Length: 312
Image 1: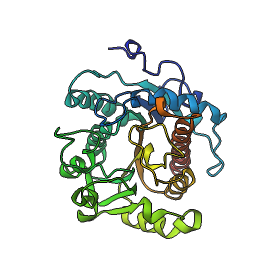
Image 2 (image 1 turned 135 degrees about the vertical axis):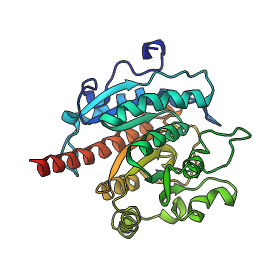
Image 3 (image 1 turned 180 degrees about the vertical axis):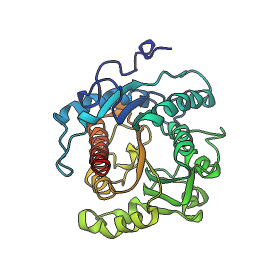
């Protein structure tokens, strides 16, 4: 199946204008699937818009890390997915393609709805063992069913813990604020993890987050860590283009403080999901997503350079 069969696949622009993926250590790949959403669809178009927004980053030199990931990055374009098939079949297709990519590259995936994270975690768990998890989101995604269905974009965290993909004590959720029953909202905390709600983070940025960043680094330690960033962790003022917006969220600067301040963790992969361009205004959401992905990749470029120095 060719991604060229789908009008919404990203067949033109590459993230930061980098070449097609070959033997570069860093890889970016789109997952254009939104068949598990419960409100507004359209995240299947997210990968192409995030790539388009990334072209505004010019040479890609990051102002904090003072590097560009461009020379280390290749674009694998979008996965070929059976979008009209049951979710389990889509996830199997994601696993098959992601496992090949993850075995050879440090990968960032652009969704797509948040149901795509579960198969990515399965691949990462197979490669790295039990994972630490940092999860930015407005929603806890720990419901035991999805409006009567067994799985969806609101159940994957629960499923990941139940399957032993992630270490619950090294699972951190940031920005949670949506309505929901207490059993779901507190599930990660009751399993030994940490939850930093959007309410707790109001008015805190920069130095105001330093103690929290230190606590997260202590909790995660050297464990291989996966980062998943649902763009609706941001307040809709910063990211209106998403399927389930929740007022009262994080600011773009808060998220960047987290990404920059936690860059020394042992990250093994990332996804950025739930960008739905049809509801965006002035490309605010895709610009934020592109900047978050670029920041993560720039930090990984620094880590790659440090490893190369150790080997030389």
